[in-house]
Image (cartoon, rainbow, N blue to C red; front, side, top):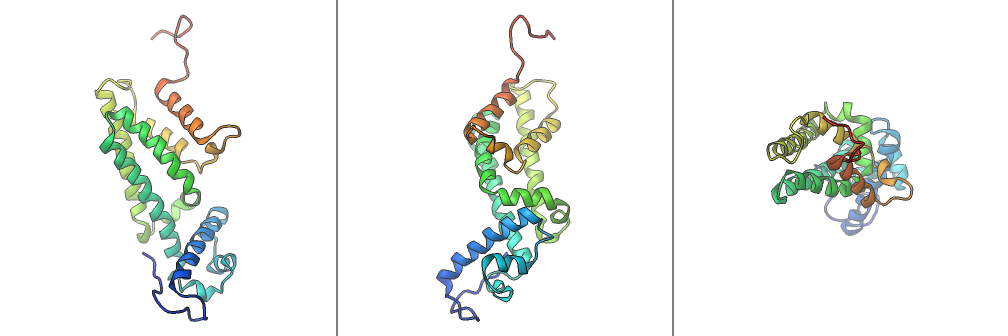
Length: 216
């Protein structure tokens, strides 16, 4: 997906491949921060190079274009998310366990890819129309299918309410889970505590059981 010079020194006399791989990782991280702050489309190659402390031309020793940088950030992120989902479905004992595993593992993955999340939130209208990023809509469709299928299987097994609207439930859960990690930084709570609270609301609701509970 991304072009890299494999051997020798850089044209401007820079270090060889070993150091270059570290510099490449630095460029990806710095570019991700800029994309998250300014927006992908609004960030220029010059700004990325300035943040990395290199000349704009030197940036092309590591990447053939800004799109290559964005591709590396987004493909790495979405591949990890899909791996979380597929592992959960393959290993969980039932649909409820699968969804719980998805929420727990994906929450950790999302928190490690805040730049990619912000890029998708801010510039989805761009990425969703570009052939180079065609894997993103495809991946999101697979994610939706997994959620809906597990919710439907849970309904059939009597684990979830029979009147549950699986598609609406997925969309509500997606919007909470995929907010760019702000809710995971709630003051005074760890990520694990927030995830536990989210799962309790998802599976148990907030209504108290007992004499004061409404009757159906």
